[in-house]
Picture 1 (tube, rainbow, N blue to C red):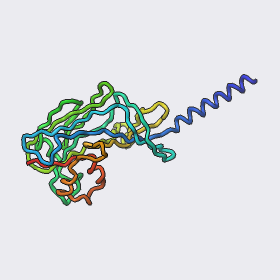
Picture 2 (picture 1 turned 60 degrees about the vertical axis):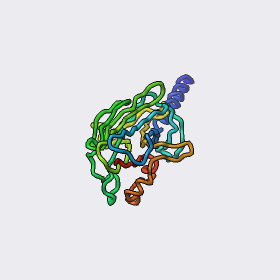
Picture 3 (picture 1 turned 90 degrees about the vertical axis):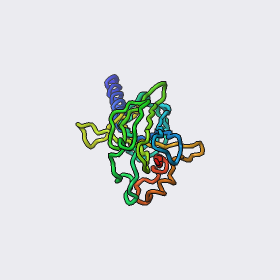
Picture 4 (picture 1 turned 135 degrees about the horizontal axis):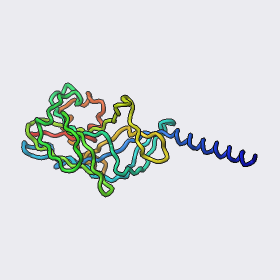
Length: 233
């Protein structure tokens, strides 16, 4: 009888432990720093601009507990991870009465000749390629150049988009990021551009203010820190 009671209690505690684990649900916000160079306000037709990523596989992630709403930073390591889906967009700024998402699309290939150096470039879309990072020796890497073909004002605006499996359209893809949590989703990826040791960003935001109307934008902080505005003459 005592053995049966001990077994029942052990089974209950094990079941409670499993249920507790399954109640863990987290969302993660990560950063993929980008270097854009040479850092200039204006370039000439025939010049090349480079976009490069080279960062370690340990992230200081901004974590949200989806049950309690608690938010905190946590270091997590993601080895050879697939951060689907990501895009290197460059948009031509032509109409200051519209925000950047309403600018005319489909001009990327008419304006640039791409140079693919490092990374898996999956497909070319109207505003730039979709890509996957290369993982090597604990670092994620990407390098792409653009040779200018036409004049204009442009903004580099990298983007992360959730992957929706065809069978579960409308649901964010769950990913296995840490062993202690059952349900985990990357909710967003930020792309800090040319971040300096003093916390500033070399993004030519003053050019954006000069050519566009910042009051029309929905996420001005992202434009200030995660985009790069430039002129081609």
